Length: 217
Ligand code: HEM
Image (cartoon, rainbow, N blue to C red; front, top):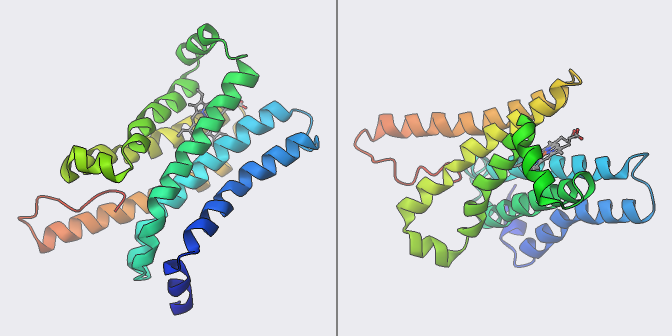
């Protein structure tokens, strides 16, 4: 454990994590270029980028529980980068959908969002993620003030719920919920851990305003 903690605090750890987080993209680009994405590459790309958005959402929400449980403060250094990778993969997911399914036709996209509830739910998650990505920099935190920034970033709870609903709705047609259940349990456990921690802190410090109880802290 001490070795892992030392490595995580190392100067090279951030660039390494950055490169590892890009591997899914590299794998998809190579797969597309070498025609190895199956019979329907467009569908494959839309689904794979959706999966990676959800995986990075789980990862970013796992940082704080892991940091606290393993007493490894160095983990906090990776939270912002992982959060921005959630946004990076959802932008790719949205771009693949807009390109391969909708031919970049804004009218078609608007009609589809209004017509298919699972698309509306995914799009709502994307809309909520946008201000979080835009305010993840030190200057934005300073401009907003810590408390307002913390309140804004609580939207990550709604984003997690919408992401699961989006996935559930998409799979409902096929009656195939096994993978959805895995992600729902993981995200439920990560958010549940925060709730338990919040109520424990409240019990110990009843007068606390809740400051420092960031969902992503
Ligand atoms: C935080 C936001 C989002 C997350 C976490 C997410 C996640 C997912 C996941 C996990 C899948 C299923 C992949 C699979 O079957 O393996 C999926 C499918 C899909 N998503 Fe999203 N998504 C998000 C936002 C969006 C947005 C903004 C759009 C478009 C406006 C969108 C459109 C789609 C489409 C078209 C599919 C594939 C449906 C099909 O193949 O039948 N998603 N998404």
